[in-house]
Image (cartoon, rainbow, N blue to C red; front, side, top):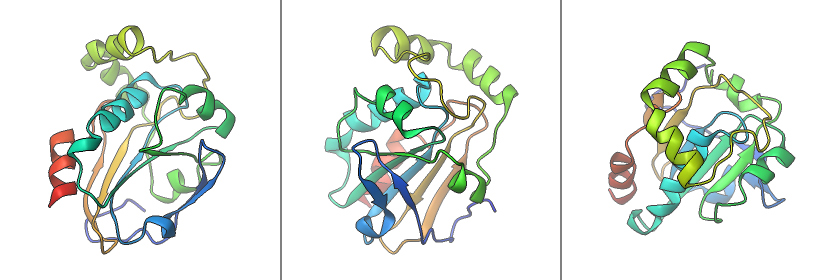
Length: 179
């Protein structure tokens, strides 16, 4: 089922890159951004996480950022070594939650995102150093999904991306976190 405004996400438990197991219960009562990303070393994905980390001082006090990749944990650990611990970075190797929430795959969406996001791709690789070949485990043709959840656990905004760079604007995420 696709996630809709008004839904709740009651359960989420996955291995994190720090070796722990993340459980949604541990952040219950917080506002959250949950994002489903692509494969372990996706430059677009890691650039978005980098932008999230760079904006951490602008987010509200009680705001959690959760990034979920469809890949093997070991691959994600290799690809995520430039990120700090202000974002929970999780591996859903078996696509349990990706399938549960109908996270889509689209070769055309990847192609279009690569064309429209060419300069983002170049920034991710050549300026930030996110090598797309570091560890290519997971859904190469996956499309992102962003979910904003209020402190009562209710989905307030959800965006199923049409391309690899189609996310809720960061300014909207910041505004939500402070509302």
